[in-house]
Image 1 (cartoon, rainbow, N blue to C red):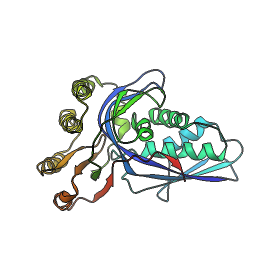
Image 2: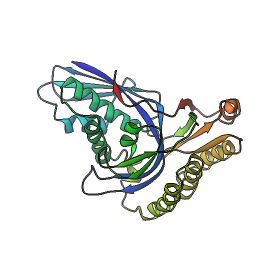
Image 3: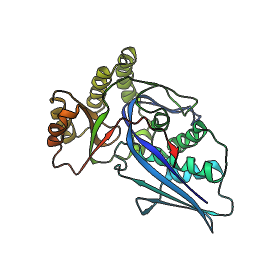
Length: 290
């Protein structure tokens, strides 16, 4: 038996860590952008036992994929092979682990006729992310889509997410490399980071328009201190282009920029020489079986 699924990627722009005893109530408040570029996942059963996971054809020890399989309780006398394929850079702030978790959940739900709703699949994926330390707010956002504000933390059905209206839809994303998310969200000392986020989010939630979304994103990036000098230099140059709005992804040595189509060449010229650059759109396509 087999199934295939798609899940969009997600850029977190601002985040406040909110941990509770219940993983379903844990997560992040913040703001971000769902993007069309995502992850394709296929799952098939096979003789034997255990779970084998591949990412872009390479066998990997991918915690979230194993965790979703375990949470759904489908390891009963047969093996499971999971294959993830994506053009997104991994560990660079584009929500790859969350998209993989959702894709596995959707496929297992179909193969084993579990009868789960999208929110229930999302809760399993969110719990896997929190437990593995790979993300806090991507999954719920992927299910909602668009440019979003995470106003209450938690898994689908627990968190509260609202959209920001915008006619900006074209983005270019770029990356110098990844950051180990678990080393950041797995630490204990969040007081300083959360204080920065609380201040920025209070102003954003009071004026939830696109221009303020981008201003607050840039401010959080600068004050949180996750950006390298080369990344901040590129973001600064992009923001000097009229009609371009750029900021950093959380977490990764990566950035993104909204731009008007007539600004395409100027934006790409500023990114020349960076190894990973790709264009995409704001994602309104929900996770789905294929």
